[in-house]
Image (cartoon, rainbow, N blue to C red; front, top):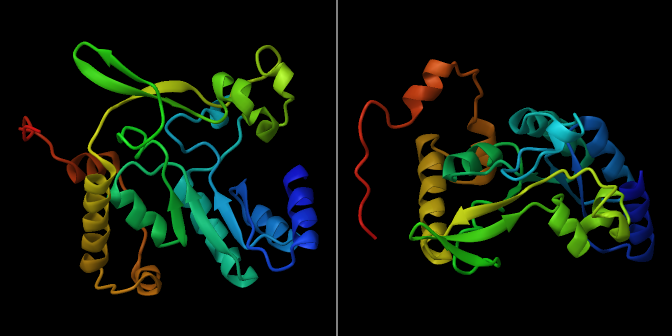
Length: 228
């Protein structure tokens, strides 16, 4: 309700402003925010690597299911969708873009030298601090209002919906983006889709068994990683 009221207030004050709102995981949520005046709606409750909303609040829907349901209604309402959370590799982006107009990446980029976060060394490896906006530390630093709490309560009355973690320091952003772009291009190429609209038209979804999941990745070998 509070998000809807805020969107409505902003839309009244700024009729031509593009507004991004969320997060929701249902057709009803998309309709609610679209009717309030949102142009772009974020989809995702709990899929992020440092998010614990589904465990703490018992709320959320698997991300691809949420995107599928939301996309059916978003088209009718004329709004765009952002897949927020659960993106771990380029293949996830390809799948998300069959239903959404864009993706939000957090953990995927958190290890890059360009990302913020305290760097620490553990057993000869460098790691970066990475915390969810729903973690206690982040709420103490200013994100408490997002979860309906007062900042002064962040240390004692708040049920955290995220954790604070470490990400191993990875390649620079340019190199990582090049790898992601290559993977997205490959996915679109396999489907014969030269554009995002055609990617959405050509995509098909099937239920994958545990055996199918296992064979999708490298298996029954010891991987040799190239030296940096």
